[in-house]
Length: 473
View 1 (tube, rainbow, N blue to C red):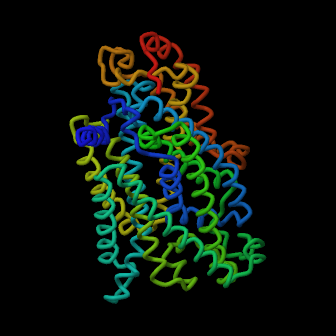
View 2: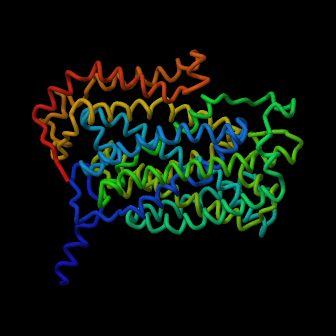
View 3: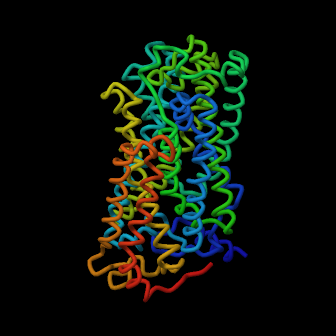
């Protein structure tokens, strides 16, 4: 029996990009996936997005969420199934449409987004941790010294936890979900004891003439929802390759992520609108950091502690997946060293608002980066797997320079061209009034890329597919 247990322990580990994960080495069930993906979106960053989207009014935030969430998280489920069936990471799956060498480009950008998310998450939570620190030491919450110390502490804990692997992350996420439930219920209670539901629902940006410095269209709100969602799609296979069933790889992460996003967007918007109502209708997203909002609502230190805990939990996902993206770029670099590198670089991003002066402006630039590049990349992955190759990938060829995914020079140039055309369409979309007022630039670029890659990429896909064998689970 001991030998059997030892064998099982050896199988349950982190697998390389081109290693198939056997079923008896998979440990993510539906409960773990649901909690992981609720926590991925029910976090301070989504809360902050909700404060920005509060410009649409509470009804507008709900409408944007109910439209955007089903779109992007059905796509998440489709990529999640790819991870379950092929048993590779997102960047491993990119080796098929982009080529073994070509996949390094999305890997670089993907690693940058995880570094960016960690930095963004950490700065948001750093104001909360700084509030806790200064309650004992005194001083200015927003001083550079307190923010720097807070950023370093949060990232140290996040990185140290991430390097233990996805199995331990799932357990930490379960604890974080409990903390988030407490936080959201508490925020809701405080909001509705200070402001009536009628005042929240009826508030609009036009209530105060000073609100002319900030505006947001419905298409802009959808862009926020979709840009965040597509960023998560870029790492879903990193986890579903370890899932024990198709349902655990598709239905549960889809429901968890959609619920977490809707939940905390509404929480964030309600808090920001409540503060606006208390300030005679004035809506100011530039000063809407979470420590300020919880302080205005009179929520105290416990709320700040919960903000920090939830940030550490979601940072674990970013650092873990960012490490595997880096491993696809520098194949000889151990994944755990890659994760530490992501944590160190995230600290630099976390410090950037101290230099640039405005966190909101920094965050908007980051959202543009996400919206331009990742929907187009996901579009190519889906069209290639489901339409061109009919779910026929061979993981044993993922590192074979004489195999079907080498394309002669390691790069599928048609995929790269399609990707940049799709990304370019994101920047062109705001010039089309129908797009900017309805579906937004993110979904527009996704659709454009699907069409372009299907037209340009069929020849290369058909040639490489001839020698590919399907690996079924």
